[in-house]
Image (cartoon, rainbow over all chains, first blue to last red; front, side, top):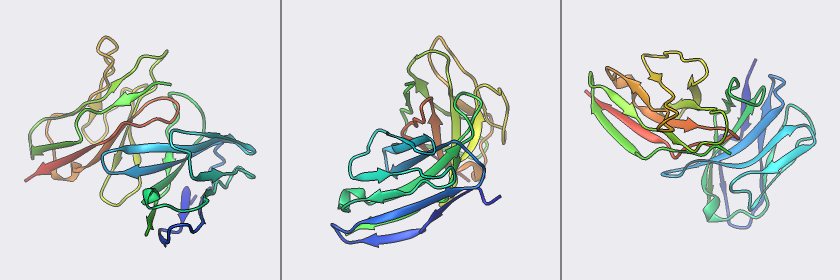
Length: 114
Length: 104
């Protein structure tokens, strides 16, 4: 199994541009989520999904959209990039909900918005 | 949702010294707590989950319901333990992270 994969690894955008960060998992996990990682602020949840067709907002959803048309894929769209969105983005998946289930993370996408 | 906080952003110890990384959680039903580790430029990976009461790479974490804490401990730190450590709670929430540096 490849686990959780993310593309691209690195991306530089200009302010106002849009783009999609890809995330895929081959473990048939129902739950998927997107985080951003910023120094001193830890991991903050952007959006998450509890199954195909179902998404919900996390702690910092503004400026981002998600969709979940299949179990495997959970892309994150930046609608109009801003310098404040410069960050490292991690996608994660989880087989279940609750204390027994860990999250599996992708390798991250390092995004710079100039 | 069960929130977690990690009061120390940075922690530096010498090799062979004991290390304790603090995690406090807000009570909200049954605890659901994990420790994750991120080595330099790598993806996060699970270190411990409270339900398993296991020891991984010499690390242990005990749930203290009275103090609502889930501190991560290791009696003798190694240089390869240098990493970012995150405490995680329910509903996909993470703490702020503690950067541990183990000096030779």
